[in-house]
Length: 495
Image (cartoon, rainbow, N blue to C red; front, side, top):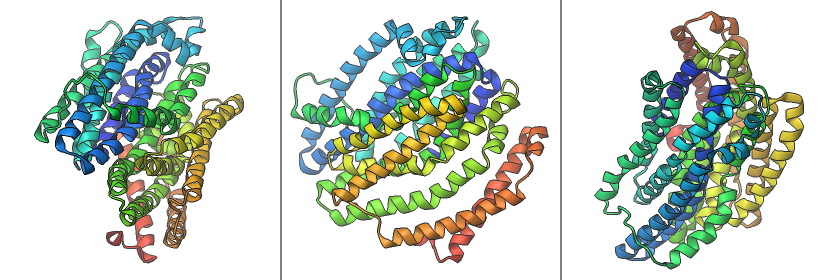
């Protein structure tokens, strides 16, 4: 389901690139979309879900069904109340928020970009309220072992944006405003879609005012988690802030390269983290340490085997991927080249991003939200410092590189704390697997470097020829990689 969602996400970005390109107007939309998306990662998939799911798993394992429903009701009511207030403030103060998050727009000689972003933010920000309630619903479904429905839900946002770009844009005086409306419509569709499944398990939240002790627990865990699990998103937002001061198109170049990074990150890191957090929380509640450790081992093995070749592929095939997916009509060769360079910088940090997605839930499943914060503070500080240094020499590429380096620092610190607290450390079988994976990836990389189709072919080819060529390269690379692993004695079924 996550794969389907991300493929439709690529189609969405293909449509947006083809219809609107990479310019000042798309920069304005991407900022207006990234701001509620950033808060979504904090309140929805980020801190809220990470703090809420272990609490719900514990109540479900140790208390009555009536108490479970009561906890859901109180938390849902509190979340709704807080988000309605935040949304109202954001809609009223939209120009101020745009100034804070993309001050470069305000200081442009032409204020069109700033005003457009402000108007679009008033439409896109209510998406935060809708998607946060959707995330609450998804956490409840995950606790009851339903992972497919929450994973499918993002498909609806992608469909909404695709249809809005193609059809709704024709009826608006400013066509790109259709994308803002597409975000809002997609949010409504996502929340509505999950309601029948909550009714089926009799866990639909109801309004319940008053106080419950679980609210204090949630608040205690969520405040540090707001920072700890969302460091990578904060780093991306800092990238956007600084990119808004660079030449027009910089925000878009970073966005499109980040979107390609998000495909393997979602399929490997986020998918593993989503299932692992639910399982780890359950095992921790039952004090089942063997299955707790086995779950971490399995998640890391999958991450290593699938993540490493994806990392190398993003770096070595960056330009071919960007040209094949986005270089059409309004998205020109210059934009494709600039985007591919930032993709190389982001792609080199893929394994670190995946490791964070797996390491952070280990602490969170144990109710520890403070330790990820310690790592996060160091990582975010280093990102800001590296941004300010590298942007002077490498522009938007420096921003992407700084994000990857800070992710590596974050992942390293999280692992250090896992070992220090005697929670987990790599075993000998992991290191043996690492050596085999490095060997297999090296063989695969040699094929890509020596036999890949020249970039000139992609520039001169049609959509179908480009897709066929890049697909052939990816399929052959995958066959070489997995065949090498098989020769080395690794059987995926045994994993």
